[in-house]
Image (cartoon, rainbow, N blue to C red; front, side, top):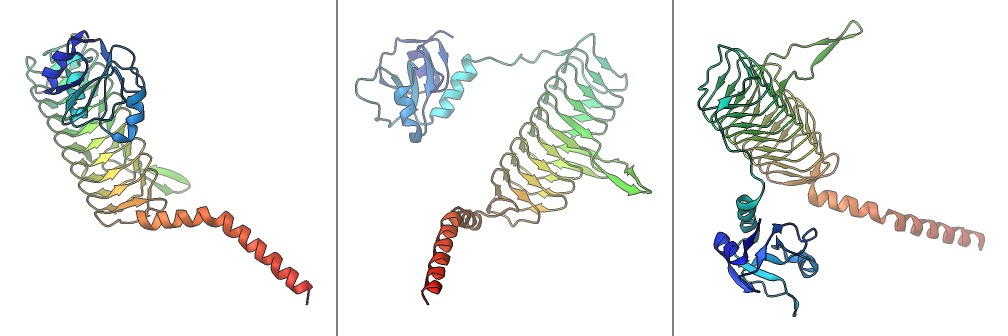
Amino acid sequence: MNVSIEQLINLVGGELLTGEASTEITGFASMQEAVSGDLTFFHDRRYVKLLETTKASAAIVPADFDELPEGSDLICIGVSDPSAAFDKVIEEYGVKEKPFTPGIHPSAVVEPSVKLNPEKVSIGAHVYVGENSEIADGVTIGPNCCIGHDVTIGSDTLFHGNVTLREGTIVGERVIIHSGAVIGADGFGYEFENGRHRKVRQSGIVQLDDDVEIGAGTTIDRARFGRTWIGEGTKVDNLVQIGHNVILGKHCIIVAACAIAGSAVIEDYVVMAAQTGVAGHVKVGAQSILAARCGVTKDLPAGQTYLGYPAIPLPKEQRRLAGINRLPKLSARVKALEQEIEKLKANQ
């Protein structure tokens, strides 16, 4: 990257607030990590101290920003949305994904019964595609992926390397699945009989609707019967476990290391922060927010923020935590009162 401030201004549609438009930028980074020659961005006034101390040469800032210390040589580009403007810079000058290149690598194994147009799909090295699967135009399947039989993949979907899709999986359009994800493994189902765990047949499927994104290392189990269903636009982070027959609604956000047990229902627009756990057969209402490490053990009404284990509405949990924090002082006070009582008894 070697670009002038003037070029960046034209790219993001901003205006020069301080500095010289002819100055050249050679990279970009966060305010903490930036060095001389880098471009950074600032959009939250809670972090103004970081902006004041950054070693970056230039920053994209809000158009009305006027808090830079006097004498600072930081070049400022004013825009209405610094984060979005910085994304434009990254998209233009950052590391780019390999462009779509149709064709099937010679080492790939595609069964003869698979339906696809080899001139309109991209299948990488050492990929396997099972019998009777269907792959729509614009699909990219990265190296070492394994696609089972009777799988359906919608147009413009992207699988990064080492993704596994088990038999019968249905994938919508514009879906992104990151490396190491396993979609359609058997649900964890056993019956204890005669001193042994008998495996219960898992004969359902997984369905991912349009515009779903699945993070690296995430696992989504196939249904015992019917389907495990991830709704349109839902984004699932890395290392998430989704059990059999779970239903995730539309446009949910599921953050890293969450676990959702079998047959749970998560309605539309739910946000689950990191390491949240949801028990089986419970329902989380639409537009709920589950704070980090929540433990959901029963149905939760829609539209509230929950915290704690078991998960309860945020204000109630905050009061409980505040009470716990007061326990040491309360204990000391009780002990002091007990000592006073003993003294009074001794003086009688």
